[in-house]
Length: 125
Image 1: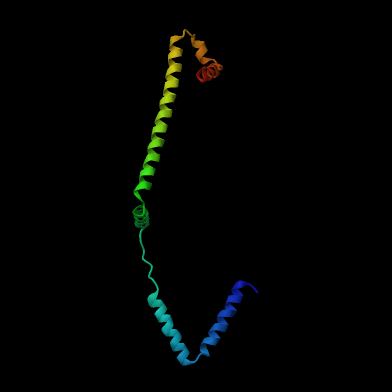
Image 2 (image 1 turned 135 degrees about the horizontal axis):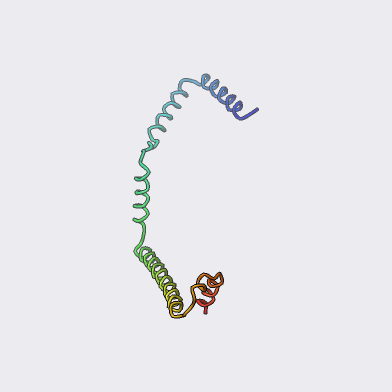
């Protein structure tokens, strides 16, 4: 017996029992059903943007000043670190460029396949 057939049998049994109920029991069940329906919350449809805004507003209302300040300091440290690393890279590249411009290398040295390895070895020293 599959699940669908089992559910059909249960529904038939419940419907048969429904007709055998006394009228006062059926009235009490109807009253309880109406009471439960009246207390049930109605679903309110909102746009996705309004839901995201409500979440953000609720989330930021519960933040403390220390949390905001620590997040700002962390972000500032990340920005300064990225700037410093980029500055170091530019300094390395400018040193390589000035060394290349000061040397009297022939044009064929720049097109040599081993030249890139020489550059990497020279920049690591």
